[in-house]
Image (cartoon, rainbow, N blue to C red; front, side):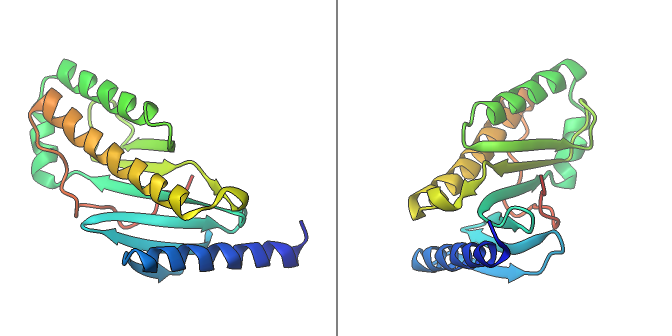
Length: 174
């Protein structure tokens, strides 16, 4: 694909996505990032989702959600028995692996018994398969993963799920 057609596809994707989000009255804010051609921060009734179009892969987009545990939940999690923490982490991995719409996930910091933040991303949506339905299906995959995270945390540790507004400020680049 030559440079002109790559730029043309990238522009078409941007226009389609912004039009569809505006039609559904999704609050969005575009921002500049060095690694990406397009970054849109979406506010979906308190769920913060980021839509990214990489500079290297301009014919596709993906969506990410960063979930950070509030400080009181971090302290509560630290006091839980190590075996319960391991079961909780396994439960979280099952939530992520069981959601076919997700393409990547990361628990950080990288300690099996201490995590503070979860980063999840959808699979890429390519130019040829980009439809309004596919876009909102991917958003739904992220929200379903959030619900799974909340239920796993509550089931294994008794901790109520992470606050919707407690999100990280840096997008999850895969």
